[in-house]
Image 1 (cartoon, rainbow, N blue to C red):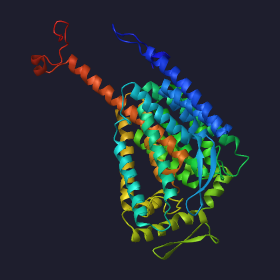
Image 2 (image 1 turned 60 degrees about the horizontal axis):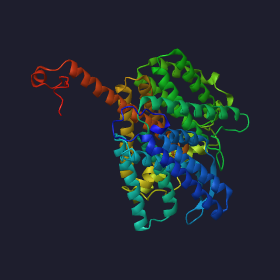
Image 3 (image 1 turned 60 degrees about the vertical axis):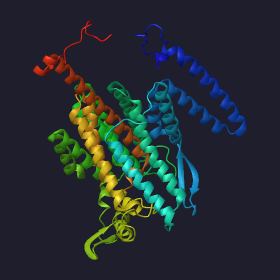
Image 4 (image 1 turned 30 degrees about the horizontal axis):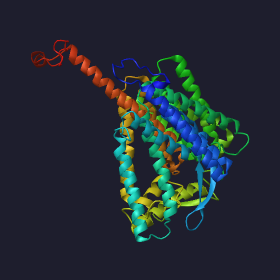
Length: 502
């Protein structure tokens, strides 16, 4: 907005300065908010609700002033917003729903961005990119499967739980849409990445400080027990982002800082004791080295793996060794035959869940039993097949393909090192989370998906900037070196004042 520092040069005779319109608008908005808050407080008479309402209004106003302000606030709230246990939902009252204040902020900021864009004459609710079709296809199948379950009255399916799960999924994609809509330059991408890394360092330091206080490190402000897998998935994102940017960074100081960020995140990552996260990070780093054509990255990873029995803390070694039990574990069978392997209960659950998948595919193979039909927590893909069937799995894989392709294009097409590093990082992150999904429902976890879709939106912006830069360079090249046919017809020839249309 011009009122807040942008230049108003070039205003012609008879035109009104943007700030002269915005100043009265902001003043009226502030008075209106004050009146609404006053009425709300004396009606509800609950101080906490009034404070939440006041903060929401402030965030909405800051977003109207400058959309980047709202994105900064959302970025901080993603990992540092407290959870509120709001009780059970559904007919059985067995499933709890934890609300977070950033659930409200996402909607508030999204509305603020839409209003700001409408005020400036831009009404498109999203940035055009290849991932949109993947998101819409997958979400459509989820809605279709749930409507089918509702219509036919699928047993053990709860419409209230399904509604909240679908709402949570919608929030992930709103983050993607709103960030892609709000950010419009590589300078803004850089600013957002600085804040993202700052928040990541705060979370990592929190994890390091809590190592001695709890058995397994987890994310801050969690309700209902710790979730080490969640923090493990988030730290995979942080480590890959730092390494991806470090590989392309042109300055030594930047590389040192990004390397230190990766190491800082790696310490609490180890102490999550999440074996699914360990395997996922290996896959992610391998993809980083392969796609960047940096063999030394893969070599360093292999050296660390070989030396891990000597380098890793005892608790990490014990956690990995705990997977395979020789006498008191669960026996693993394949097609009814004993494999001779015995694993711990947690690993066995991740294997046993595929028997549920086999049964459900025999009952409803194409659209599954509807979103939230079963409480599968041990595998993203098993849950996909149970809830949305083969159509849901194909739609989900199509979305993943679009994500990987977009990240790859960003890496290859960008001339800016931040765009290259971001594209590389998101390929590694996506590969890591794809593997992570075999051990947990990675693509349904708020603290993993909100940062992921945030960075994916920045990657899309970097891709668009690369395309725009290429188009400008091609236009400039054609203007300087027109083809013989263009010279003859005058195409590409600079237009002089006398030739300009009246």
